Amino acid sequence: MSAPVSAAGGFTLALGAAAAYGFNITFARIAAGEGVQGPVLVTYRVIVMLLVSIALGLALRESLRVDRRYWSSLLVLGLTSAGVGVCYLSSVAFIPVTVAAVLFYTYPVIIVLVSPLVERGRLSPGLLGVACLAFLGVVLVLGPAFDSLDPRGVALALGASASAVIQFFVAARCGPVPTAPKILWVHVVCLPAAMLAAVATGGMRGPEILLAAPWAVTLTIGGFVLGFVLQMAALGRVGAVAGGLAFCLEPVVAAVTSALVFGERLAPVQYAGGLLVVLAIMINVAASHRRSRRVATA
Image (cartoon, rainbow, N blue to C red; front, side, top):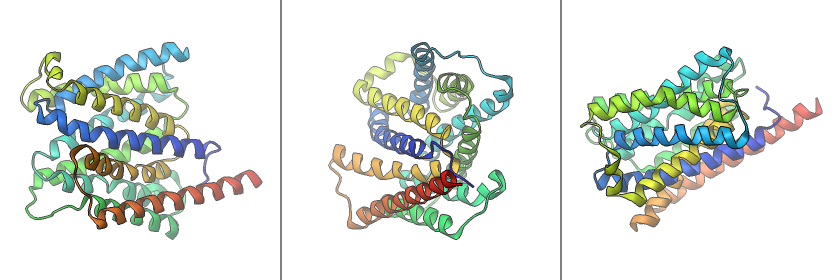
């Protein structure tokens, strides 16, 4: 499984996306506390992404048309992107947020395990070890309490994880599609799913609801917009395995941001978990550079 020529740049973009996603989760919690529920916020977030994709296409002078060879892939990418958001946000109605997060962040390990089947490569013990090290770090950072688990919440969190696995592999295959049209058509597919989820969980609200927490909504949507643009750009340059491992940084950033905003104090075990995630990412970066040098030499 050789790294692409631009793997280093793609991995950097993936780390930036993970940091942006981790940043926006904290402010989504503030918005929810002010009455802006998750599915409603996701719906308006999708609308903003549609406008951003059009503006990005005009700025980059990219056509928003897509070669029909990629239509089916973009459809799957849109459905799985919606699945990640809807399932993940819905799961916390039944189980604690930390438990939902740990179940969701099984996806980097799953990506590593299934990558030989999808990408026809070889699963090396070293890569599996790095994935497990990163997942252990995520568990320590989030510190879940598995006391009373509702099966519905567990199923939804694992559904979000499965959606993320498919999303990463399909996004990597859509690499030739420019970023602007990719974002546009993915969110065209996402919009109906997000609106249905909003209606099913209490009803769709008008845009005035966003004024209940203007700064939190702005930072949440802004963080997601930046994260999704960087994610799509990254997965066009780096494989699903490296991209998935980079996203283990997201819960670390979320924990640190939450501690800064809410004044929460992190336990020593959480700091240790963060160090394990960073260590796993550094090992993966070093391995990617070695693979790149071998490919260049060959």
